[in-house]
Length: 117
Length: 113
Image 1 (cartoon, rainbow over the protein chains, first blue to last red):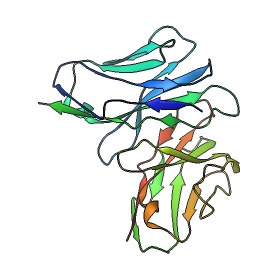
Image 2: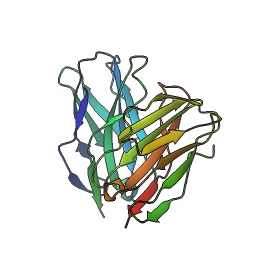
Image 3: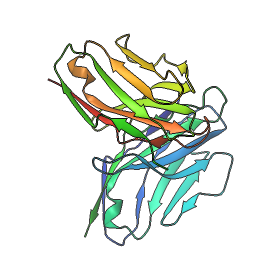
């Protein structure tokens, strides 16, 4: 079974600085997707970025980028120029690419990101 | 795009009562998912629909939990004979296809007295 581990329960960063959130996962599959979701307090889960395992190039979305290390099964999220609105719980999630198993997301426990003004 | 809508936002009930939550997915999305999220944890998958067909329900936490999507549009999640341990946030998500990103609603927070 696949597992996702986020070892940092909480991280803090000064506004405008850069922060990296860690995620490791375990799987025997070769084809899968990885995601970072953001959940602000009392608000809905929002997709931040996704990475296809077959792509070597790291995904980037504006200030958000990932460092995907497939061999090490590591998938970290870098947030550049941190803003107050980035404060939230960040969840790393895994989804199989195998048809028939690709419906559910498997989640880490989350990292609470605090932005210091 | 009206997003995924869940109702109610909050539900407080006494132990032993039955509760039902509703989820309206994004209109063109034929896949619908239910998750449970307890405090300080990531969501836990419960069940999954493709149109009106429930393709995965083995992860429902007990036989007190059931879900329906009768016409392939909105879905309901029912918990019978609620217990203290059922207190959690219940999240609904939808996607266009199984491999597409899932879009989440605001969730229904259940509190059992």
